[in-house]
Length: 231
DNA sequence: CCCTGATTCGC
DNA sequence: GCGAATCAGG
Image (cartoon, rainbow, N blue to C red):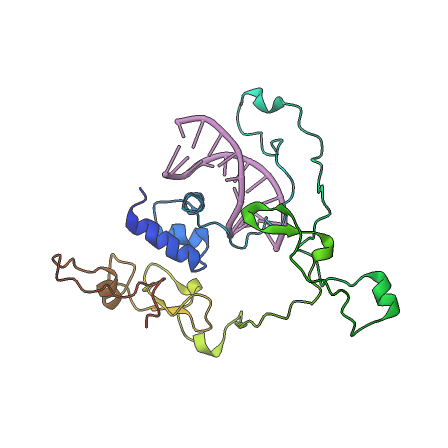
């Protein structure tokens, strides 16, 4: 199988829609999960919750993953011992609420703005991706307000009762998505498939559009994963 | 064990 | 560019 424009588009939309690499691979067919991930990365679609990512700092000068096959001893170079970690005790973004300075806590000055720091944050260095690291003293005082977020029920809800969920998918039911992934009522069509196709007859009609002669085309209908809402 | 995504590197 | 092999966390 090769990466046609259609397959790449589907991969992109599913990936952005939150489908796992396995699901995408299964949906596309003819490719492995690894192929999907590899392609996604090459497309620049990276970044999304990974089980093995929270880590970041360790500079990989030495090869942590070497035992693969016989390889020239080019990595036999004196691995720089323990990278000079953080040359600057820069502000860590992964820290909990910026605990106020101990002495400040002792004097208990709740209403007193710890610092009139007005700022122009002193940039200490530039991090991966281009974010600007700041010095410890430049750390913002106010605790970031709890971001309003819309919580979604993780388990069966009234909305999806009786609907075809991802787990209900098989070769005999229509896989046309109804709604958007992550929404409480997201589900799949679930009707009997048009034999030989992943969708029912009705949705095959949506999925497989006849090409109209150039010039007489109308804007295509919304696609399953990217569209503004299909139902 | 199963799953996940990330990464490496021979092809 | 592709993707199997491998890693590492859940």
